[in-house]
Structure formats: C-alpha cells, structure tokens
Figure 1 (cartoon, rainbow, N blue to C red):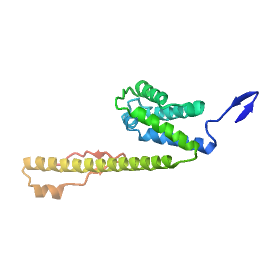
Figure 2: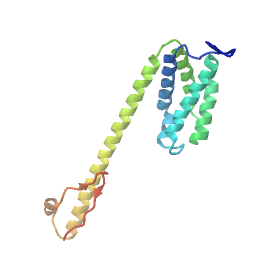
Figure 3: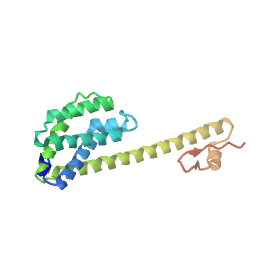
Figure 4: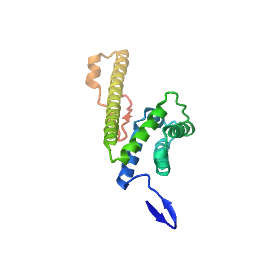
Length: 192
C-alpha cells in the first residue's frame, strides 16, 4: 500500500513477481484457448490478430489490477465474448469463454499465494502445442514436396510415352529439379 498526495492506492498483487507471473499466465492461457487460437491462426481479426490477442491479455490483467479479488468470472466472460465478437468476428456458443474466465480467477488467486504450478503447466502445454504444430507443418511441407515430385515424374513419363519413348529412357534423362532460394522449383524448357 502506498500513499501519495493523500490518495491511497493498493496493489492487486503482493509483489512484482506475482504480477509478472500472472501476466505471463494470462498470455499462456489465452494462447492455449482453442477458440482464440483458431481465430488468431485464421486471422479472423485481420492481419493484426496476434496483436489483438496480446491486447486482450493486457485488458484482462488490467481488470485484475483495478478490481483485484472483486473481479468475477461472469464479468471476464462478458469481456472475452465482446472481444471475440468485436475483434475476431466470432460468436462463441461452447461456454469456453466462461471456462477461461474461471481459470483466470483461479490463476489470479494462486498468484496471490505465490503458487505458480498452474502457470508452469500452461507453459508446458503451450510448448507441446507449439512443437506439435511445427512438426505437423514440417510433415505437411514434406508430403507436399514428395507429392509434387511424384506428380512431375508421372507427367514426364506420360509425355515421353506419348512421344514414343519408354519409361526407362525417361528416368535416365530426368534431371533433378532446380530449387531457388525461396523454395520454388524452376521450370525448365524441354529440349527435343
């Protein structure tokens, strides 16, 4: 509690560490919230969807800083639903906003007691989701390139067979594709 010019203010957090831990926990919780994650990944809020998610995290933290323990899950749910509707053009019907609101209140109460176990669990969940998403993207990219190669090989074989060449002659003549720095395959003209 600090006083300045006869105005009395109280901090909603007992220490700066609990405040920063709570801010981190809010960001992690919002990153792992499926509805918001899809909205950001799909850019339903426009190209600045990620910034809107960060802004929402700030709004939530500010709500707790202003109201402390007086912050209720139903108030938070209203904020989350309003932001999802206004900023991401998304109407939620799955009660996930209320669940996230309850989790935020729980997270706040734990941070007041310097209990950061939930934040640690959220950090692990976030890292697992991020790593599995990256792994899936890499596998998808690999699948796409192998499918493209198979398609190109089939096209070369079909074209050469139309020209009267056998498939064994085609494989001896086929060249490896030329890939530029951006990952695009260079299309070369066939020499007859």
